[in-house]
Image 1 (cartoon, helix red, strand yellow):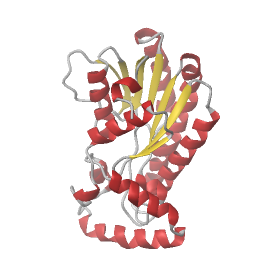
Image 2 (cartoon, one colour):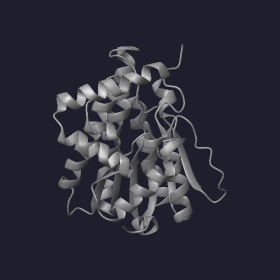
Image 3 (cartoon, one colour):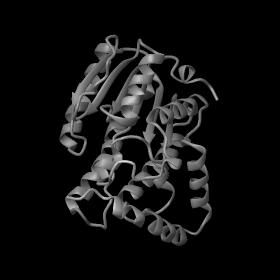
Image 4 (cartoon, one colour):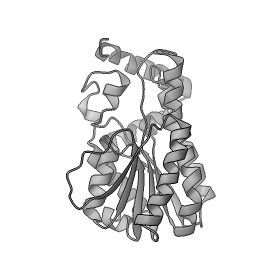
Length: 272
């Protein structure tokens, strides 16, 4: 596979959601190390805490579950691009997302809908608004899906379904954009060392380390896949095997197996 550095040759700007922690923060740190000249624009509630005096980072405070805030932030993104990177290819990374471990509709319908707003609607809103600019200048879109996209996920039902949408929508969009100068890559990490499990309501280290990866490893894998022109990548060979098995077995059976496996984590839930 091409090197991560070669994958972003010719890019001048990176627009990312959720860059304050986890995989998003690792994208900023690694890309800035590979290409110090890149200009970054992050959309999230908190500003990334990154120690890099040469980092060209613009932060736009935004709650991605609120369509009006996303719309306002996108106006600022366009200003950022005109000011900081008026030419060159653009990398859009739709990274923000969260899950809730519970029996549907716990902990409440509003929070379930908020999950869809962040995981799906904000991703579509970002892409739809910036796609004309990407087509004009060239670039790529990285959408963070999940290995949960390959099977039904009881106790994470809405989360898994939202990531299945991200995966299949990304693959379809990549085909629509073929020949346009813009490519789309769906990244499917397994359990990753981020704040995901805390946000989902689970204790730290709830998932066995055998399936876990660092966020840095996920980012490196995705950049190599981007450089190779791939439209989908599953990070980690164990996750690849799990995803492949999930696609071969009947969906009702996969759902039953997933229910048994995921039910074990109920003992790992953070006590209110």
